Image (cartoon, rainbow, N blue to C red; front, side, top):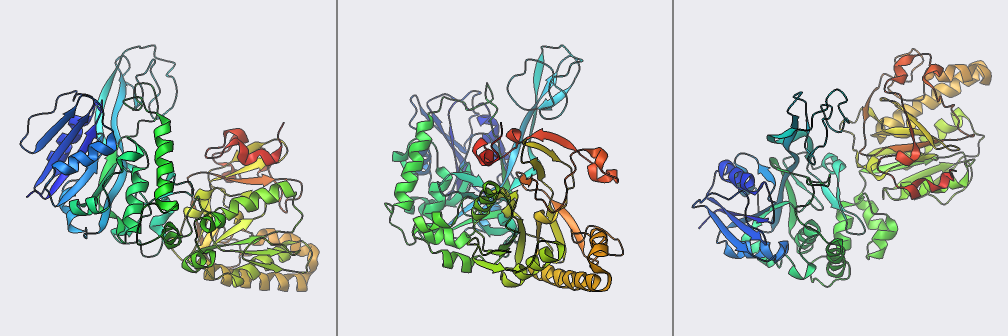
Length: 568
C-alpha cells in the first residue's frame, strides 16, 4: 500500500515534466504520481517510471472529473492534488503526513513560482518571466523597454525556484464566495505555531486521507471543469465537522500565468464555467443543498471578521451579528468626527469601514447612528476635543487591538488584515495616498505615518491618551489657548514618531504596508493642512519617495469607489 498518491491533471501543460520530476526528487516516503492527461498529450514526454501512472484522454473530461479519476486509481492512505506547474519542498510528503488527522484537509504554505527569466542574446539583460518579448527590457520586473538595445532575439533561462518574498499561509472567500488572499490571518492569536486554521485556499494544492476525500463527495463534476475548487473543498471540510489547516513547516510554489499572450491559460477557458461553479457553491453551501453538520453562517462566525464580509452579508446567510462580535474581540476600531464633513465623503468613508466587519465605537460632537456604540461630547472642535474623543472611544471599546479610523479616510479592506506583532509598539499603515477632493490629484511618500493609519494594542493607546489629555489640559491651564496651539505641534500628533522634549512618552513606532492603499481625502475642513509640493517641507526627510499620481490609477480600487468626488 502506498503512503501517498500525488494527483496531477494536465492539458497543454509545458511544465508538466518538470513538476512530475520535482515530486519524484523531493519525496521521502512511498509516494507515487498519477497523471491524468486531459485532452492533450504530454509535451515534452514524461519518462517511463515505475512510480508514475499515466491515464490519457483524447477528449477533455474536465479537471474535476480528472481529479476523481486519479483518486480512483489510487490505493494510497493519502492523496494530494497538485497543479501541473508547481514545485515542492524537500520531504513534503513526510511533513504533511506527520500532521494530518483523518478529517483534516491540509494546505502547505504557498509561494509564487519563479519559473524562468527572459535573456537578451545581444546585451545579456535578464528580466522576469512573461509572454515572448518583442523587444529588450530593462532588468527587473516591468521596467519597460531598454532603449539602448535593438535586439529581437531572446532566450528563456530557467530558474525554477520559489519567490521568497511571496509566501502565503492564509486564504478566504468573500460574501460572493470569490477566492481571496488573507495576509492578516497569520497574525491572529493562536496562529503563531506551524499549524493554523484557514478559511479557504487557492485550489492548486491540497492534501488529505483518501477515504476522507470520498467522504466529502470528491470533486463535484456537475459544477463544470474548473472554478471554485478551493471554496468547494474548504466548505465541505469545515461544514462536515473537519478542519482546514495550513502546515507552515512545508510548502509548494505555484506558477501564476496572468500576463496573457503565450504566457496565459494553456487552453481556451469559458468564464461561464466559473460563474456556473460559483452558482453551484451558493446552492450547496448558502442555500443548504449540501447536507452537513454546520451551516455556512457558523463558519463565517468562526473566522469573523473577514475581509469582503459585512454585517448584512452575515445576516443574509442566517448568521448572528452579536455572536460574531463576541467571537471577534481581537480587533476593533474607534471612529472620531467633528460632524462637519461633506456628506458625500462621510458616507463613503463610513460605508468602507463597515465592510471590515470589526466592532466600532464612534465618538462625535453630534448624535449619530454609526458604529456599535456612539459617544457624544458637548465640546467645540479643536485639538483637545479630538484627544478627548479618541480617549473616550478607546475606553469604551473592548477589543485587544484598535484601528484609529478618521471620518475623511477611505479605508481599503486590506487595511484591516494587519495585527500588531508587539503590544508596546505603535504601528502605522504607510500605504496612504492624500487625495485632493476637488481634482482627484494624489501624492504619497514612502513613510507617511499619520494617526489615521494607526493600529495598536488598545491598552497601550488608553495609557498614552490619558497622559496626553492630562498634559494638554495642564498646558492650557498654565499658558492659555494661544500658546498651546504652538506647543501642541511640538508635542506631535503621532505617538512614538519623534524624540522632542514635548513628547507624551517614550513609545516607539513602526510602519507597515497594506496590500492596497487607503485614500486620505483632503478638503476645506481638514484640521491639519496639506502640502502638495516637496518645496513646502522644511525637513526634506519627509519627502522621501514623493510620488504624484491620479486617483483613477489607484491600485486596488475601482472607478465606482471614488465616484463620490464627482471629478470632471
